[in-house]
Amino acid sequence: MGIGYMLSPLSWWNDLFFNLPIALIFGYAISWLNPNWFLPGTIVGYWVSNVLGIVMMQFGAVDMFMEQENQNPKRDLLIGLGGSTLYTVIVSILVYFHVLQLPTFLNNLHP
Image (cartoon, rainbow, N blue to C red):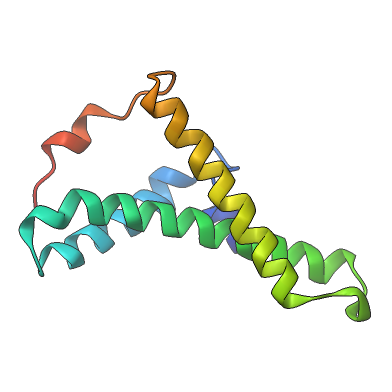
């Protein structure tokens, strides 16, 4: 649950220390296949690290607070992925309508 919290979008400081470095490494690795894929790869890497954090937090919380016989890993995974996807859709809509702004430095990054 602790590692999931560090990767999740629920902690305000996680991006600088965890998610952005993971996303940049992922984008750099993807750019070996095609240099134009750096920015899309970075975005995908950032999204995956956040989704992984939310799912890890959920599994940790379920382990801590639910009894073993009440757990359903498939259901829990689907709920975690659904919640993460909903979060991503909401943030994407906020960016699309300029309620949230993307950092300008992302437009200037090249491997």
